[in-house]
Length: 279
Image (cartoon, rainbow, N blue to C red; front, side, top):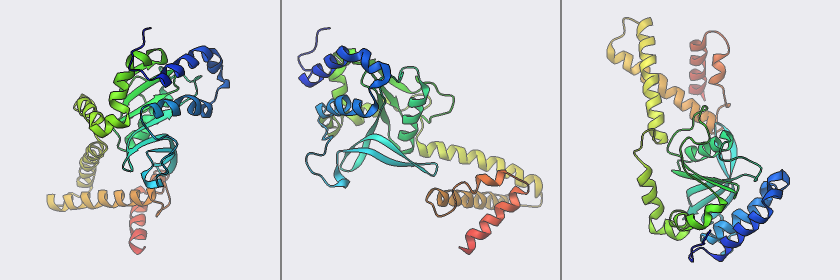
């Protein structure tokens, strides 16, 4: 393959090195940490990112955070790389060892989409250097999704030379500062199946409101429409409040879900409301 004159020498050498040792890397003896140090770190350094914080920036303003913690469903998980401008995440990268099949394995794809969805990031990258996948993370990850769901680009290391200008135009630090990343994100919005985290939550709450209103009305025929609306809204507000408390460690995580294990669910829910009131 003819390499473009604009492809940096560092990338040419990484591609050549990987191709030469590919069989050994694929046997599983080459782990994720080795991959990150020998391939992923220099790849993104070439895109202009201070991967090692050689500038000595404070923690708040580091360009790249390794093992960046994120809270998901009450537990803390860690993102391999978070790339930031002014302390704010722009995109994240999850690295896998070369033995992982990124093209077809749904697990890693769901993992990074879940991280990015909860972090409210539009794009994420999943790579083992041999394979490079970019995901539209405005689409809510669902259990039945496969590896191709919401994937907007996929190629192998053998295509880095011809794809380099495109990669650089979106994910380099210079391109992000110039607004190219945001323009690319805008171009992917509005497609079928896209929704923000807030939009998805609001749509789900509307479903709860409808189901709860029908249920309460069925059991309390004397309620006026206004009284019914107040009862529904208060119940949803209280549940959401307790759920936020759980996620922040103020309440025991999972106490709401535990109500499903047993009888008299509503009466026990009222007990949680009353206990929260006293606190």
